[in-house]
Length: 350
Ligand code: SAH
Image (cartoon, rainbow, N blue to C red):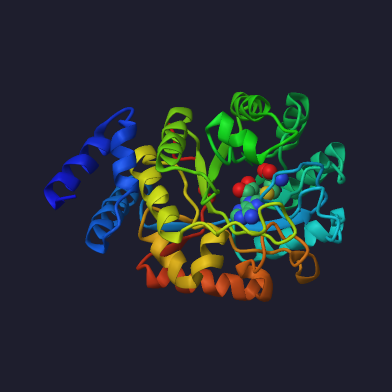
């Protein structure tokens, strides 16, 4: 694309209330490095204008890998019989949250597979306990549940909830989620919003058969639903899953989706995802920070559990202590010419 045309398309996408899917597709097809630099710089400017220079940290605790679901790409899926399952105790989780709070981080993300092994009542009392002890926002990422369970957790004090749609196109969704229901996932996201959670969504880039049209539709879905945060993931094949021999997603494509999500949604919080770090190392995290991202999620799961939370292999954080994860986050933020913002980093949506 000629550079003046590229700038015109970018401006049109930026200014539109609901961009044209063809424009997004054309931008996702950009390949040469000069064009990509224009796209990423544009996203970087939008990030600066709407989300500022600060990078927020969210401390991640992966507290259980039990799962009743069968997402084809995920190593935690119930058919992976080779995986040793664990569920951390109330006090183990609290001690991780203590480490996060001691570092001055103001958000903990409690993530797990979907099995309810920990128990909803127990999770609610954990949330209450954390809220009593620490001045910290709680994001839950525990998958699909009934509205009444989401309500219980909200009333216990949870602030935010992360549930990725993975792909916004129902037929494509069904291909990767046998035994699950797209409709229910949409219902969950709608309940979470109605209950007053700051709601996060996201997708997976690089699934086999995914077209730029599908990715463009994902971005429009994020725009329509006005999510407070959006995680753009990158598919990494896991040998013990049905997709074990598929190709990994393309890092460049994930960065393009991230950049366009910034340009289109403007104020959503966008993490530099762990999968991006796994594929491309610190360099990729810095690239993400310069292409629209404003959040990093250092991992605080204890070492002995972290390696069992194997949604995909080679997870970047596995060999790092949480101290090291934090140090690397700081280095990436420095290289990107930014600073860590130690405030809560609540939703920027009005
Ligand atoms: N069970 C919870 C959270 C755990 S999975 C839930 O479903 O919300 C967290 C995220 O890991 C998923 O949303 C998915 O996008 C990502 N993931 C799973 N398998 C992956 C893979 N093979 N490559 C990259 N990301 C993956």
